[in-house]
Amino acid sequence: MEDFLGKEYILLSNENFDDYLAFIGISYFSRKVAISLKPVQCLVRNGDGTYTFSFKSKFANSEATFIPGEDFVETKADGVKVKALITLEGNKMTHIQIERNGRTSKHVREFFNDKLIVTTTADGFDKISTRVYELKR
Image (cartoon, rainbow, N blue to C red; front, side, top):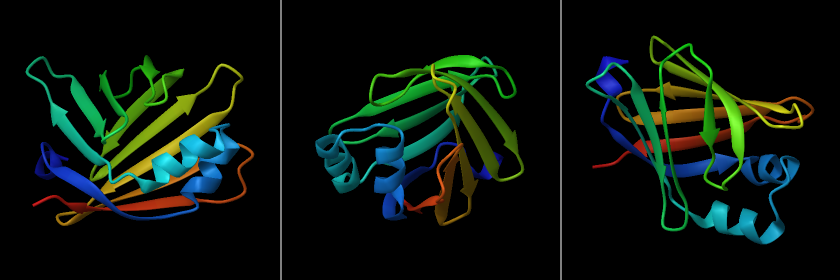
């Protein structure tokens, strides 16, 4: 994961993301705004050994500081708090989010030298959402 720390990745394309947002209950208007954004994602390691994952766009930002393999409470970009767990293995960051109603989403971020691929699945969601980000230059 060392090679990808501190690099910024900007959204290039997505597939089934609108369907995923509808599945988790995001309103039509908010989904359309979310789909129109070109967010930037970045993962850094802090001096104390924790990591911070950030998601930044013109309308919504979120940041999660975590210790890999330890549960924590995360506030998503839409303001909803979820129980979260992030693990790091090789070039993959697996991010599990559990909502109050028990619904679980899994976001696997696979880092490459020139891109980041985010694959999202959720319990009861019959599709896979894929978002491709390119290295911001």
